[in-house]
Length: 468
Image 1 (cartoon, helix red, strand yellow):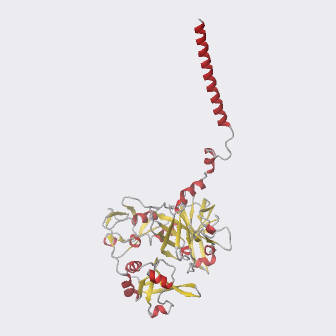
Image 2 (cartoon, helix red, strand yellow; image 1 turned 120 degrees about the vertical axis):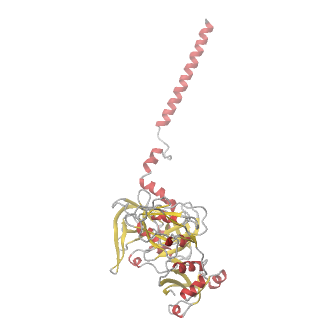
Image 3 (spheres, rainbow, N blue to C red; image 1 turned 90 degrees about the vertical axis):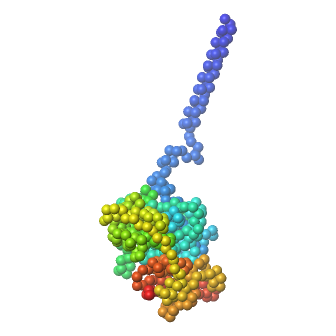
């Protein structure tokens, strides 16, 4: 009997101990759960509260926005509208680690194509691209449109692919909606300012002449250095490219809308321009998002099909491009020579088959002699050293004709641009002249360089060639 009581007592003690242990840990957990959080630790609820639509939009696009800098600033011709606006990009201070910060840009193709403002890169003898993750690359302009203030850059020797920014459909804007300007004002990378879309279709005049009639207006602070950066909406999509602020009206900034931006890029983001493949379709986009054939290049594969100018493009290899000209261009430049693709247009019932062809470039020096009466040669390392030129490559005038000499062009001057394409070698010369077709004239830009008192003086000279 005594043994049985002892056993019951032991059982009771064990049960009581277990109950007390469970109760102790339950109270401890309850206390921890309700005690004041560590002042330095952010809770999930706080993070959720702070991650506003603005923060989410910025997180989406920041990887595709880059800082542009240079080790040396030069002066070149810029668009007429810059005289009426604050062009503070030219006065940014030197930065020890990467020289002068000159502006921002947006990655628009995974292979490393960047769109920015023409007046930003016109100042640079070399361009350094810095990504959000700290990676740095050299880049070079491959085309520019000074009057529209748009330039296209290509990253030199890219490693891997890059995140790209995405745009809106042309009519997808709301007056008064929240917008965010991203850029590098005063060399401060990744700076964001928030405002509203204050106006659509603004006109910019100079001396009574209309320069733009489609600009976006915002009260988001657009400082010097923001030029070339994106203006985005809360969906993280680019609605325009920051361009300037008015000197006489602080707080009013302007941006080039995506429609103008994409239609300008459609002149350059072509296989004929970026690769050695000929297709012959130059697309365009209308304000309602319709993608159409703006031009068919003579003698191209497309010219031998039923495709004609002004036809509406419904599909490219089964993909519908409506409202996204930039993605259409990305897909176009990746088409390979000898591999047929399908284009569906509204005007023809069945898809049209186009087979891209390889382009065989002729000698650029020979073409320049034939069509421009101009003797050119590539800038070699020995010549660069002898002439003290701060360039990695280029094409120089070997023997200028009298007509060019009258404009001030002399032996040793750099040919920097033909049409809208920047010139770095004789292959670039050949590409432009071969693609010039039957156009009668071709504008060109030369850089006249002379050393004076230990300083290298540069002057840009513009001429118009009559093609032979």
